[in-house]
Amino acid sequence: MESLDKAAELSPNSALPHFQDSYLAAGILSEVNEHVRCQLAELNQYVLSELNKALSVDPNLQPALIDRAEVYFTLKQFRQAIPDYDKIIALDPHNAGACNDRGLAKMELGEPMTPYQILVRQ
Image (cartoon, rainbow, N blue to C red; front, side, top):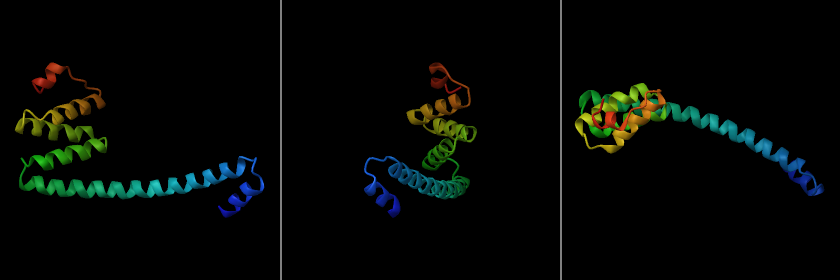
């Protein structure tokens, strides 16, 4: 990148050194992003494993159900998230966030719900 800085200095009216510098930086960023994606996938799997353990001890632990549903939703595993949202709503019918997110998960699966269906939890 130092040589590109020198090229930009020697040719101040040329966009090419700046473009090449951005191209190299984007390549580095892409590699970093891929590494972060891999680490994030591993972290999500670990979080799911720990939440599953917690829920095997107490299947009605709402914070764990909420967190697991959110992880599934983030991973676009909507079919896995919906039963957690169902259970959260069964335990706390006034949990608007779970009702909303359940509806969003169903929409992602192509199963939109009417407001009435959301209210009666069908």
